[in-house]
Length: 323
Image 1: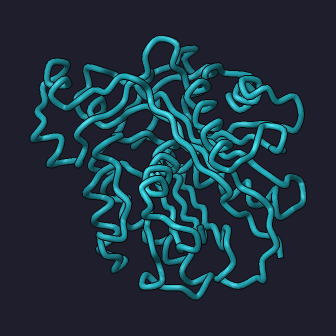
Image 2 (image 1 turned 135 degrees about the vertical axis):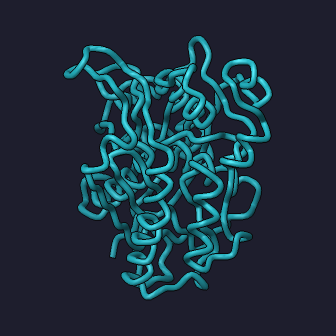
């Protein structure tokens, strides 16, 4: 059977680093409070000329270089983002242009922080359906542009960045020992919309709006929703937490990450954590974390890796891949 195998990875971050100490001069907060509640110590903030598309294109080039490929080898560019450069065209089309691609096709996906998991699952379907041989899957965000910098409950949490993977169609035997995506499980429940949303948009207000969040409500639902889809992935593949080499979660909050791992019986030494470095970069957080862990040698070829995320809407999902 056809499997969607990870061929390469890459990442991109803005030049500016904003520490918790710097945030103390922006809103009433403290480094101690932020670290204790979230695990975040710093985040990257996009500056002039740095956009979702520019960061996404930089991550894409890095992933192509890592894979030993060129844009000519890519059939589809798929971008997960909630902060596009323009209402239209899709950021994916802009990145396609920046890469010098005039073939294939490109589009965006919007599932907020779950976007990269949704995009990976979608790319897998296009590959297994024969509509693409190689897909560039990108998570890219500039959440600093939709933050209310007077709201200390949200502005301390988010950062900017981009990460990318190249997926390639390869033959597998149809077992859990195949390299590539083994299973994906996606969920959403729109009744939770008001708990995490942006209070603007082209059709509703004609403005960009700002991010609004009921933090306690999000935290209350997060661990249960995350464990639900991870357990579904285990059941679908006949695997268990003991079989996992790595859990790469959405980097939203250290307490959510630790709580989910504990509930699932996954040792913390098997969990990739970058929230301290990047903050919450929404759809970019998982590919950024993957890039860090693959670059430093933790994630190796043949490792069994679980990706999971939860985002506004709510949306949530998990994907099991053999690296």
